[in-house]
Each structure stands twice: as C-alpha cells, then as structure tokens.
Image (cartoon, rainbow, N blue to C red; front, top):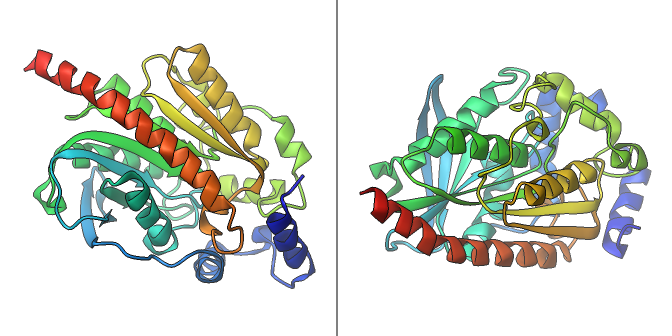
Length: 321
C-alpha cells in the first residue's frame, strides 16, 4: 500500500496531462526529468566543494562531478556514484542535490559519474564507462585534490545495476584501491526472467512496466550476460552491501533477489525496504519527505559498513606492501 505522500503524488499524476514515458523521445524524457527534479527534489544545500571533472575512459572522456562537505580532508575512502535514469536519462544536474546529501550523510567525498547514455551510446557503453571511472578514481588522480585509500561504489536504479557490475569487474581484476562496500538503491538486476513485482506494479506507479520496457529497449543490453543481468553473475567475494528497495516498484523483486543472493554467497549484506515508497524517490525528497528517513537509515548502515571494513582493508594493504 503506498504511503500517504505517495498516494497524493500518484493521484496528482493520474489526473495530469503529462505524457507517458513510452510516448516520448529520449530527448523529451531527459528534459522532463530535469524539470521534474526542480519541483520534486530538494535544493543542493550547503556543500563545500562542487568540482567539475573530466574522466578518461577507453572510449574517450566523460564528465564527472566531485562533491564534498569539506574543503580539505585527510586520506580516506572516496565514493563513486552512478546516477539513475534507466540508462537513457539522468545526468550531473538531476542528481547533484541528492549526491550532495550523500556527501553530507557519509562525510566522504563523492564522485558523480556522467556515463554515456542510450540510445546514442547503447550497452555496453555505460558498463565500460562505469568501470573505467572507478579505476580512474582508484588511481588517485591529482584532479580530485584529495587522496583516496579505498573506494565505495554506489548507485540508484540503472546506477545500481552499474554498481553491481563494476563491483564484479573490480573483484575479478582488482583496481589500485580496494572496494570497501557497495550501496544499491532499487536496482534492476535481471533481464533474463520475469519477477512478480513487474506484474503487481505494471501500472499505477511512477515507473510502469511499459516505461521499464521503453528504457531497456533503448539500452539494448544482453539479457543473458552478467554485464546486462548481474543476477547471472558470481556473487562470492563481492564487497559488503547495503541494498535499499522501494516497496511499490516493478523492480522491487530484482533488488530483493540480489540481496538474497549476496547473503547466500556469504557476503555481509544489509537489506532495507522503503515500504510504501516508489521507484525514483531519491529525486522526490521534497514531495515525498519521508524518503529522507529511508535514505538516512540506509546511509547510516553504509557508514557503519565502511567503518567496519577499513581496518581489514588497511591490514590487507600492509601485508601486500
């Protein structure tokens, strides 16, 4: 059952004349998301650093943004965050305010990655950019102006998918720094099969089944390869995870399945569900104010995971020197 704020939002959307996602072009959908974020999300707020970055990848340069609540800091973990938007929409501006909140909640610097979008750059462009960006941050480039000693990977929606795939890639071929933890918020994890929540919430929510198919139609991923469907991958040895799903979401069960697979594989995992909330709530913190509580709970769990993992990472690094 949607919580009251969500019911009010869905009621408003049902009576509005806004076009459905699947009737729009990617360019229209991108512009629409930027406009909706201005009305639905909170402002950036106080943040000491907002530094534009140029990130080199195997296919050229992409943009990034460093956000930090402190102007300077001692060496420590750096968060690499992949924005949501179905691999088609979303950018540095749509997620700037949310990622500034992440930087404040964790008291860590965060690099927001502006990976290439479909259909102009379909799968596996986003996968490659996500991995390359993480490896670049792990190389402690001078452009960051701070020294990293570990990574934390995170993302929402499509960015959650990229987080998982990047964590798998960096487990199999280690970066210059260890990955302490991963944080995924309502991720899509499996294109190879159908889950009950896809039918249960096919209509009447912000993300519909038709919309989900629209995104994936443009992204054109290989549903039977773990880079496109990370549920087909190997979970043993992945970094400790915090998984946050939305209770009223077509992809809810994919997030649940991922958390369960991690636990089965012996990966320390905190699973949380925002009961009564909908897909996309990280960009609707003004109109769904209770989302702040969902996020505070999840990022507190992530902060605790990072604190617990840092001594182990330091011991491992010292033993390999």
